[in-house]
Image 1 (tube, rainbow, N blue to C red):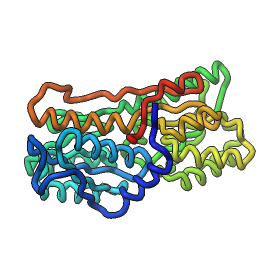
Image 2 (image 1 turned 135 degrees about the vertical axis):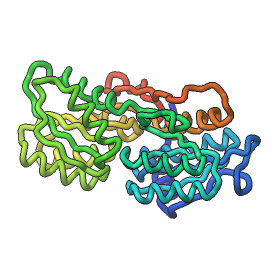
Image 3 (image 1 turned 90 degrees about the horizontal axis):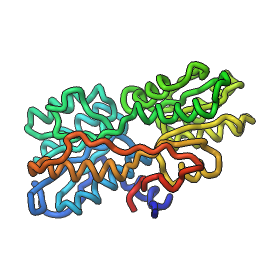
Image 4 (image 1 turned 180 degrees about the horizontal axis):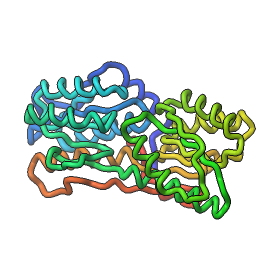
Length: 316
């Protein structure tokens, strides 16, 4: 299966962060396409997941003959609300939101609801699905549990120490970490849990401190592959190449690291699939077609033994 190159992802990253609001798609202002649908996509950050998600949303909107406006909140809840307000002012038919913080959703949904603009969520959902158009949901607790299951099988009955390098508090990272911790066996003790803020540099610093404080560390769970590369670098530099890393995403680089042994496992949750599902289902739901309001995104625990089963992560 073909995957996007590192060069194309770098170009996409550059495009995603140059300017707070970018217009893509075709047609005139106020909607386009045969059904006159205009979607506002509010992205949450600048990791490879977010940039691949944006590319998937924008490409799929073209196939659905819909216009899409894209904005990035850069992990800031206040910016997210401002972006939603901007989208509402553009008279979009619906909003697709990759939130920076699940605690922000209540205000986001209230703002959009007051304006009569439905919200479709990516990655997470809400307790009251009546308040949203729909959601493409990644069971983040299950993602963490899949990695924990690998640790449990690898450790067997031996007592082991586990470190966690989380992402940014308050959203996906909390769900991932909680799922991981709950699924660990009793013989696996979490001795450290610090946020890497989805930054490879920050994660590397966290890992350096972690291995100094816990030189007997056996495993590390890292909330995305970009951070995991920084963690691997820190452990190797400290002479702890035997610490096994489990992580999340399923990018080309992440799969290559699994193949080489840098990572022991990763959980693939395709940004491409999430973006495609969000746009197609948003358009169908707006057109009163029968599709699942809450769509579950497939997950695959990837090791050296099943690399070929990983879904395409990023669009071409």
